[in-house]
Length: 180
Ligand code: IMP
Ligand code: MG
Image (cartoon, rainbow, N blue to C red):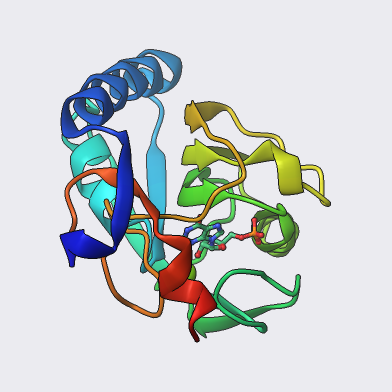
């Protein structure tokens, strides 16, 4: 598994420090407000698990599983809900947790959809931001790292469902996805 990684882009320690900082900001911003944290499966699961424990106030959590029609390294912009929330979000402060913002298509479609359900507020936290490939504008309130236009895996992120359990964010060797 590690043989397919060209180099470490963000180390475990850098991630841990950033997650702590984001958790403090979120705790500070919402203070005693009610907050529902929506984790987008599957890529955000590792980030969310760590971030949740750095938020020092009561929160509720829920999950959504979405997939975009398209191949693995490019999203088409049409999102399909594979698993929806278990509860209505009307009047609720919502924080969506994503692994990576790339073209922006996934998050812009998702936020439009969630807005139709009339939440009190909706904000986004993303671990990674790859601005070079942005086509849809998305407002992100909590951002971990801005990264160059390279395909990364680990810390939840996959290529063909592999590498999610690598504890750091690494650049995938080109030969891994070019040979397919
Ligand atoms: P967007 O709709 O183009 O913003 O794509 C977001 C989704 O594409 C993420 O949730 C990931 O599943 C996937 N993605 C984009 N870039 C990468 C990457 O570098 N590594 C792994 N997955 C990625
Ligand atoms: Mg993926």
